[in-house]
Length: 639
Image (cartoon, rainbow, N blue to C red; front, side):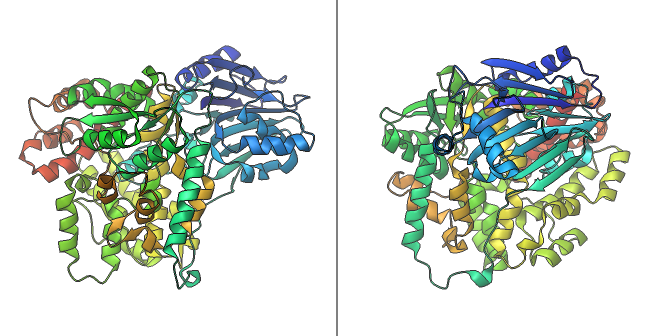
């Protein structure tokens, strides 16, 4: 994994020194080498920060073809590069490096933009084609690797992180509508929270004419669920389970390829435990496992993770986390994530990445993706309840929450809205209203009373929930099972817009760690998409097929354990709670007083009533205050 940066202009006003300085803002993504290159007429600048994972000696980028008419910069990994390289060598193509990135050049020469269909991995790349006078930009199918861009003052800027764009002169003004989308669990996958900065969408590519700088955006891959009228009438469950296990094991094995030490993040959950259970099959030495242990017993999964670690014979590293540590590192984590957050779990992940790096690990396998693909969150169970025929729906839901109170803070809230014009519109399109959208609708009421009048007016006029829905909705959702519609919406919003950033790439790359999530292998995902929903949730057990497929490599505790979301404990009002005291200091500082978005008096008035809230209301308010605090830090750092 690396950092990439580019500047395109018909009449360059950016000096090479300024471009190099912008490239240096991404050194944490690639500390091993920083290289910049400018074409002869100064219309194309390419920069690359390298984290050496494969081919230490000859993998410096940009990589060129023989006559230097093609140049590439790549962030990420192509896991099928060995097989592709072998086939291309047989066809007469030549290679100068052993880097997986280099296969992109002959693939492009052979297939053009269709080369994307041959790449299996997580990646973002920029390719310069001198002969065609164009730029070709691609991003992986799921949005694992970030790529931002801005069109500003007639020029086009690209970078793995927004901070490099600011260094090149793009303003860092926040866009409140986009911030609100992030607050309401519907972050847009085509726009950052900054006014001028967009994102290359997952599963999309851009073609840019260097003559006109016109941008053409195209989709090359999307989640495709089966139509209900095409579903099999009989299900061979064992065959599905065996094929899932085969594909998952192959995905893990592919992601163990590295010239650097490989480890694994290990929580007390089914997903990471499945990853490390399979890793054991292909590792001759004990796997290095890294676990967060919170002080609050409700959120502390250290004991269960240790049980798994002993079961697979891993070498366990436990990072003990308290509120003081979270407070001390909150601002640094927001600098790296570049967006509002709802929980301090991202700070914990930020520090866990540092722990892994300090232990000599450069590549880490992670468990992200299973919840979004296999219906792991409580929101999906609620959706199944709401569209089902059970007469005691509320009793079943309350039983879920009683057994697993940590889930109450995620996709379930007393502030959610059950009926509104927005939700009626959504129901007319989908046939029902997903739980995540009910929670999203409820957020507008809360924020409306805390923001400046000009933003409140814009918020009401922009209809952000419906706008976000329309951005994601596609007619191809018609005729698919209702649970799959919910999975689609989360996979197009929270997954790339929060989970893979605030808990994924940004927190890992902040400490030069390459994260690899095996659940996002293309072939595995395409198999999962075709699964009957009864193999995702069965008898109210989420991720059913994963449990069955991994039964032999996980503990009995995990096989039986219900989903517990990875969350840090909510902030409670207490003079002993260091994070509460930190938040109180920040809200009473000039940071809130000078905010361009929030009304300081109204925020403080609400915050000062925190102790009067019930424990559940405090959990819900936790999201609110962390969103506000992280937004204030973004204003401080970048505007």
